[in-house]
Image 1: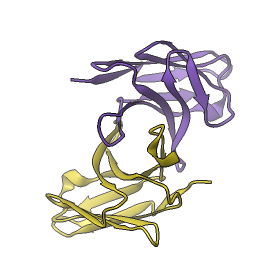
Image 2 (image 1 turned 45 degrees about the vertical axis):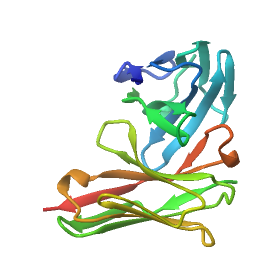
Image 3 (image 1 turned 180 degrees about the vertical axis):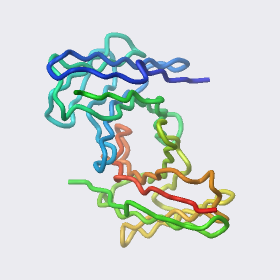
Image 4 (image 1 turned 135 degrees about the horizontal axis):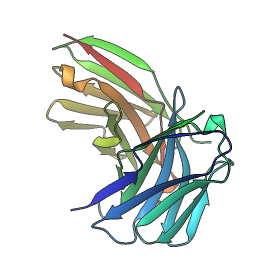
Length: 113
Length: 113
């Protein structure tokens, strides 16, 4: 069966510090991968998606970047965090063999102080 | 651009029915989804409906789709305290070709005993 992991679960970082969040998927190959941010009152915002290794599409201009160094690894990064980067970050993968269901990881709660 | 709208809050008594409404804009949406998010967790797919269907029933859940009005609803019969969560409506975009979804801001359902 497929599983998706995210770490860390929670993170508190000072403004201006770098960021690296990791997402890995098990039990599937060549999945579409997604990074979302959930901020209070703003719902779920798609940040990046990837259809394959090294292929990243950005949905909104921002202070963050994403990379996919391996088929089942998706990384969200920042060189210098802003206060507005605080939120709940969710990674998801897409099951194309089903009805395009996206499966979500447990999320990372990021607080920038 | 594509947009999904839903009310932010709903409060019901245990045993009553809950109805969560959603409107969407992309007429080419292939699938429409309802996801559930429990506190501090990722999203889980509750149910989905294919765009050529009007209704789908799955145990206590009933999904109604009005394609003409681009209106989707989720009815939960005999609502229980364990149903308290945030419910997200989502539509597939680009005809579902990339699997990308647009989510609403979520409706927080509170169930009072």
